[in-house]
Amino acid sequence: MTFPQREGPGERRPVLVVGAGPVGLVLATELLAQGVPVRLIDHSAAGPVQHSRASVVWPRSLELLGRIGASEPLIELGNRLDSVQYYSDKRHLGAIEMSRLADTPYPFGVVVPQDTTEEVIRTRLAAYGGEIEFGTLTGLDTSGPRPVAQVQGVDGRSEHIEADWVIGADGAHSAVRRLAGIELLGTGNDVLFAIGDGPVAGDLDQHALVYCYSRSGALGIAPFGGGVYRLAISVPDWREEQGPPPELFQRFVDERSPRPGIVGELDWSTIFRARRRVAETMRAGRVFLAGDAAHVFSAAGAQGMNTGIQDAVNLAWKLAGVVRGAFEPGILDTYDSDRHLAAERIVLTTAKQTSWGLFKRRHELALRDATVRLAHRTGVLQRFGAPLMAQHDVSYRPAESLRDTLPGLTRRIRVGDRLPVFSAHDAPQPGAERWPSIDPARLTLLLWAGERQDATWLATRESVSTAAPGGVPVRDISAWPGFAPLLGSAPRALVVRPDGHVAAIVAPEPAAVRTALRRTGSSFRAGGTVKAAAVPDTPAAQLTALAVPSARTADEAEELAS
Image 1 (cartoon, rainbow, N blue to C red):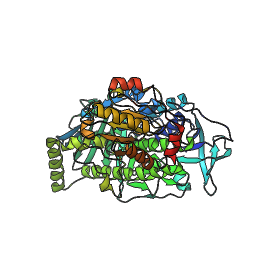
Image 2 (cartoon, rainbow, N blue to C red; image 1 turned 90 degrees about the vertical axis):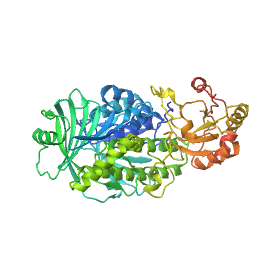
Image 3 (cartoon, rainbow, N blue to C red; image 1 turned 180 degrees about the vertical axis):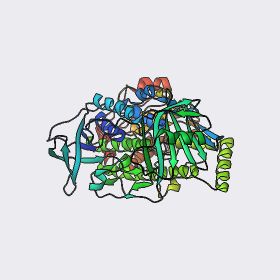
Image 4 (cartoon, helix red, strand yellow; image 1 turned 120 degrees about the horizontal axis):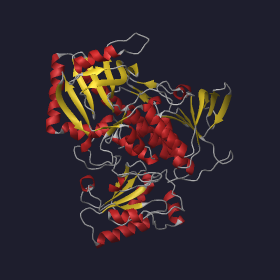
C-alpha cells in the first residue's frame, strides 16, 4: 500500500530523520511508504560502516521488516538461526528452539552483518523514492512552533532545516538527544566485551547462537555461515588502542567453547561497553528518539537493533497517520509510554543474562546451572524464553511498572499484546497468508465467532460490519486455525493497530464496537472516502474479499471522529 505524496513548501514540511543506521532507515522507509516526505541525513559520507555490529535479526523484526519488503532479502543473504544453546564449563544446560515458534512466518533468527542489513533497507528506501543526504547535525532550535535543525554538509556549508518533526536515530552518542536536552539515565556498572568477526575452523554449530559460561567469564558465538562467526567474550579490562587480537579470542574459545575451533585472522574487532541506560523520555515536543539514541544495554541476546526496529515501526505508523490527518496528534504521546517500558524491560533482561554469565562463586554457579537445567527439562525455558528472544512477548498493556508487562501463564491475548496478524505496504509477506492480514496504516476491526459460526453469528457479523465507521477495515477471522487458544470460546471483536498489537477487546455488538473505536481511537480520525471490508469467515474467501471492500458513509466517519 502506498499513499500519494503531497509536495511543495506550501503544503507540508518534511519529517527530518537524523541517522541512517538500520533504525533511521526503517523509519524513513515506513514514512515514505505511507506518503510522508522525509529528509534523512547521516554524518558518514561513505555510507554504511563496513564492519559488523548488530548481527542477529529476530522473528519479530523480520515480521516488521516484511512490511517494507526487506525480510526476504535478509533471509537470503543471512544464515538461519534455529536455536539458542546454553553451556556451563562445556556441559550442556538447555536450549531455546526458535524453530518451534508456531505463530510467525519466521520461526528462526537470521545472522547477518549489520552493513548488509543496512544495504538491504537502503534498497527498499530507494524503491520508495528516498535518499540519504550526508551531513552533520550541529544545532537544533526547539524554541519556535517547529524545530529548526542546523546541518553542515560535506562541503562545509550549513543549512537550516525547518521540519514538522525531528527524529533522532543517531546512535548512543546522539546529537539530537544532546541538543534536545534529554538525559540518558541508568544504573549499574559497565561490563566490557571483546567482539570480533572472522573465520573459525572446527566443528562449531552452524545454526545456533551459543552461550558458554565459565568461572572466568562468558563466550557468545553466532554463525554468519561459511565458517565465519561473531565471537563475544567478557573481559575484565582493556586499555589498548587497537582492537583485541585473534590470540585473545582463541584463548577463550579453548577455555569456554564446548567444541574446539581455530580462530583465523579477524575481519574486525572492538571493545563493547555494555551499559544500562534509557532516555528520560523518548519524546520532547516535536523531537523523538529511537534506537540507541533512546536506550543502550548489554549485547546479551542480540536485542539492541531489534528493539530499535520496534521503535521505528511504532513511531512511523503513528506519525504518518498524524501527518496524513488519519490520527490526531495526541496519539504520538503513546510512543513514549509504549516504548519506554519496553526498553526498560529489555535493559533488565539483558542485564540479568549478562550477570548470569559472569558468576564466579561456587554457589552462584550451581544455582544458575540447576535453574537452567530444570527450566529446560520442564519446558519453562522454551515457553518463556522463545517469545522473549524473538521479542514476541513485547506488550503495550496499560502498565505502571515492569511487573504489569510480564507475560501471563496462559496464551490468552490481552489488550496490548501482539496478535499473529501481518501487514505489508505492497506485496504480502511470503508465508504470512496462513494468518489474517491487517491494514499497515489504519486500525483494523477483527471479528471472532468463538465456538459457534451459525446464522446468529452471520447476523452479528453483518450488523457490526454495517455499523463500522468508514476507514475501518473489518475482517472475520473465525475460521482461521490457531486462534482458539488465543481468543477463547466466546465471540469477540478486536481493534488491532497497524503493528499487530491489540488495542481493544469487546463484545461483537455495534454499540460496544463503536464505543471501543472511539476510546481506542480518541486520536483517530477516519477518512470518509476510505472503504471498510466485511470479510467472509474462511481463509480462502478472505484473501479474495480483501480486494472488494464495502462502502461506508462519510456521516459515519464523522460520527466516529466526533
